[in-house]
Image (cartoon, rainbow, N blue to C red; front, side):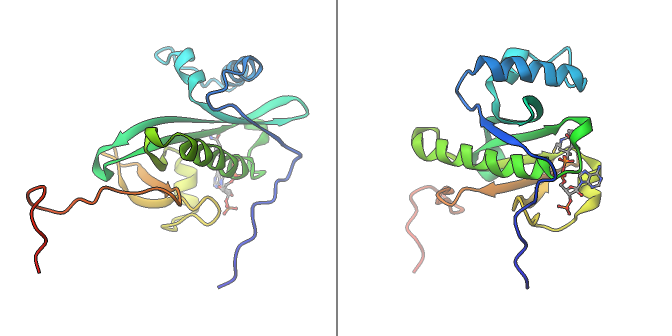
Amino acid sequence: MTERSPPELQIPVDFRPAWQLADSQIAQDAVAFWERNNMLSPNASVEERLSQVVCAAYDEGQMIAIATANIREVDFLRANLAMFRVSVDRNARHKRVSTALSLYAFDVLERWSQEHPEAQLMGIGAVIQSRALVEHDNHAVWPDTKLTFVGYTNDGYQFRVRWFPHGTIPRLWPGEAGAKPAK
Ligand SMILES: CC(C)(COP(=O)(O)OP(=O)(O)OC[C@H]1O[C@@H](n2cnc3c(N)ncnc32)[C@H](O)[C@@H]1OP(=O)(O)O)[C@@H](O)C(=O)NCCC(=O)NCCS
């Protein structure tokens, strides 16, 4: 099998990290981006969403894509994952921006996880809410992002995960905790 080369961006893009940086310029650009793309719902707290920004992509000084993550314990995997979302400006789609920004974001989060072992962040989780993406590529492992299918949400959306290389899972075994292993 031939190895697929990394995504080739079709526009010049500048990536900027934002995770836990409280960068006021990125915050201002993010709100403008969400407003421009009608991505602010009246129920969502802007402050909360800003605290979840991982990184953004810029083209000639304009924010054209944003990646956010929300760390939570995923019950059925018994692991903390960064629940990941990416949005690309309508005018900048189909140029591989989302793929490249996702890979950049995964690096930002992986590094942060290594520097903050107390967070026990084991990888990235994504609920795929774009029908177009689901219909476009039904590989269990998406070739560029390596997001791997692990099941469906109760609402029927694909749930995909990319574990960090240092990610671990509990050493659970059915039965009582502390029971001696069978010989
Ligand atoms: C979904 C979204 C992030 C894709 O961004 P993008 O920058 O256009 O995506 P890319 O150019 O990196 O494309 C990634 C792959 O998806 C495919 N793809 C992207 N949009 C597609 C569409 N509307 N229909 C079919 N395939 C599509 C591309 O062809 C590419 O496939 P390949 O890897 O086989 O070449 C963007 O459309 C968006 O922001 N949508 C609104 C928010 C959203 O749905 N976010 C996703 C939540 S999981």
